[in-house]
Image (cartoon, rainbow, N blue to C red):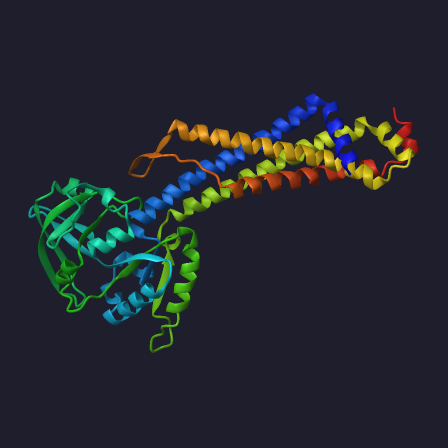
Length: 412
């Protein structure tokens, strides 16, 4: 077997220019795929981080059917105190939950005493909200960010349109669950930058102020946002919570709660899926490059070495060894290309990070590209290249192993 590797190596060196061109194509393909995965992976991670850590959270728990009616923010589908207590107890008992934030969501009217506009309001416990969505504070453009009772954080777009600033007095008017109308005066405690996605008109008040505006005798929660300790284990925790909460049934035997990950809550999940599809497409391109390059080289090698193959067969070389010789040549091309491509990819990614490239995502400006690729991805790319190299060399190798020695020796 060692002799076959030596012969294969010599054969590759006999045609240095062709071998070098083939290796260049393979290396270029590996580098392109690895850098693409590193850069798009960085963008995808930052995009998901901005969405989940700014306002959505990693997961949310609602009363069954609430999400399908969320556009109207129905107060009649809020979670009762007893149900909230069950969920909180379950969350405290579930490993992997870092923080959670109960929210009361409702629509209302925002008035500066001269003009009136609509607004979506989130009643929150400030400490719990900021633990669950840690980038929340970074969205506050003016004000100290310490949401106190009697204060409201006004979305930037609304503040600009209504010409209000920190310290101004405003009135919030909302329709209660029973259909009556109530209002409360607030002081603007801060101007908050519109979140990426559907959050352009979302304001924030203390949850006890929300209860007062809605005249709630007891706290009824619209949703509970969750943050997990390890984002990579999100779906495992989701499966656990879904299984436990699905055991809670109403009098009709139907589930009381529903759990959703950020993927079901944000339209930007479709962008994340597009990135995955693009990554798969690039990997398929790599396979095509390697397949065509190596198959072309091996077909040419068989054509140019017909008499040599005939001589090998005539002196008693078994067809299996002839086949192995050509397969090893393909394997060698794939192995060298994969290793070289991986090393060059690491250097290119390092240079990209040194360049400190930035981009804008929604209203987030100057986000730094932090390209990185895991060793597992590089190993997977290398394995794909090597396997495809072997497969590409099989057809020419089989053809060589089946040649008639007499015809091959007479080949001109």
